[in-house]
Image (cartoon, rainbow, N blue to C red; front, side, top):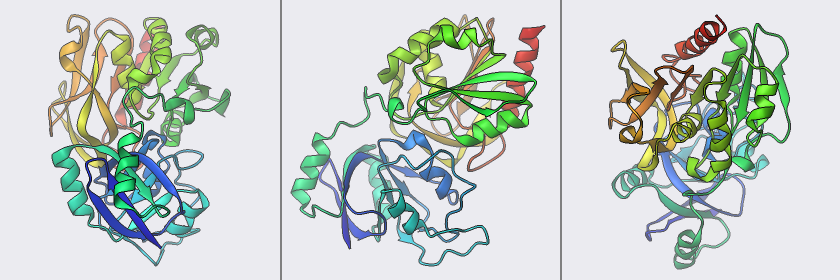
Length: 360
């Protein structure tokens, strides 16, 4: 079945459907990971986006039940050069195409993903529509232009859990995770560090969190614009200085806003498993997993209170910060490695050490 990807600037890419049928709007972005498509599909941070894989052959090892990062895929569409017709792996339970159909996700293959990626790099991420239903170029471009996009939109409410749940009930340290779209591997890493992990909805107020007497709070990753969730930032402000805090990706951005900083939209974002980040304290370079379209403005932060800890070596944007007096730190990248490099997993141990120091 024919499928079309239409961008708001009038650019058209025609291919074939290999997922669900229908029509969805979203911001089109590209991901540079060579593997890990299942983890990418199930990362809630992609809500509101159509993801293009730069690696040309996707789906060759199928899909399994163990490597998901959330309860279901949340992205709006999936774009590849070629979807493998053969899924060969002993852990595979179904093909990528069948998985997309089962979860009602549109997939399109057979387009020039290299040309699409170059276009996004030059023109920037933009609104788009993917369709198997409407095959009229002008009509689709009009729909793309009229779609909401990401700026100022609250997408967290569509991916967060709706009630408190215990990921695991035993552990030396009680960690409350504010679920803005948390990836399961973050929860797994905390569990490995002997943590009792309690996941709470994103709209949980600070008094309720503090009333549970946690040893630490983790602000999770999530989709879209942090300015669209001012109600969460308001509660994060109340947590600062009351409990050790670790922010990851979207959590880092919310913490930046809560500390009086500003955020802005990147031209085409950081999406992939090969982004070099420098730890300014040790001088070491970590290859990191990233998935974000917004960034904290370094110049907007109060340097008297905040140390810049990590910098992106591709564009010198902020990748990490730590308060000089209060027990909190955050990073823009994903240290949980799901998928991707394990270089930054040491940060979970740093969180535990911060908790120990605060207890003392």
